[in-house]
Length: 338
Ligand code: FAD
Image (cartoon, rainbow, N blue to C red; front, side, top):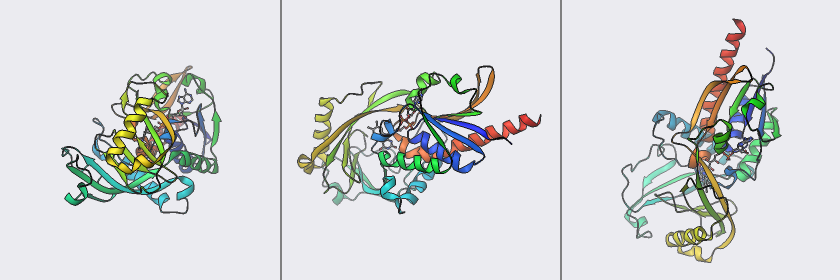
């Protein structure tokens, strides 16, 4: 069989994870990753990268569990290997705290993180505004290191990389047999999907090496995540807000809210400020379709719309996308025989 030409669009955590899965599992495919922005300029680069998830309403829970577990196990193996510092993947322990006891005290991912338990009364004393908390060890995956590490792994598996913006999938139809769309928010224009929308997030990096544990308010808006070189403090969740500039009001609000959870932050030096747009959707789109492109029916596998959980779900959804590419290949073989 001649080499099947696969093009993955997108160089964020979803695109690179998917491209690595395909290139390593299907050596008879020639895989090209194409994108207009690469690390350090993608949304993925600025994500805090804590593994953690909320439930999507219309995707079977079993599938979401697989996504989480596959990602967690993949990153745990890296965190516990010699690759950890270069890949930017580390274990991270801490607390998620709630002002009101949540309906779902034991989230679906609680069996996959390490040592999940409810906080004791004694532990909660340092957070007087909060009534309930969860303590556990999860993973922090810093994409500014992880993406270059994945790119090396992709090239080692024979993958090619090209920097270019495409305005339509039509542009790829004559050069590739299968297209894998991991363009995040770009899918609004690339595949005309109006269901994907931005949720603006602003974060700061501060120097506070004495902080070792993460603290996350259960509302998802205020968090302190110690990392390898600095501590990420955040944040905001502003739906349909396309502004990429830093907002000084948001900076003040973040420092004030995080300072209430961890007063020692008042002595931390601010190193940088960053804004990113989460590629949000009611449910991520991980599915395949046949698209009519310049008179040819081309298989397209979609993998985008992970919202605030893209780092968490990247490897799990990439494995699903690989399964969909395999299905496309089976169908192509069948067509070739007919
Ligand atoms: P992106 O990283 O945006 O990559 C999209 C790629 O597609 C880019 O390379 C782009 O150039 C390319 N592209 C798009 N259109 C085109 C086109 N027409 N032609 C060519 N290329 C194109 N997630 C977590 O799991 N944990 C966290 O702690 C976390 N914290 C976050 C904090 C903030 C402040 C923000 C903003 C997000 C956070 N996220 C977190 C969410 C996470 O960042 C996203 O879910 C993830 O980055 C999405 O990855 P992606 O690869 O789909 O998109």
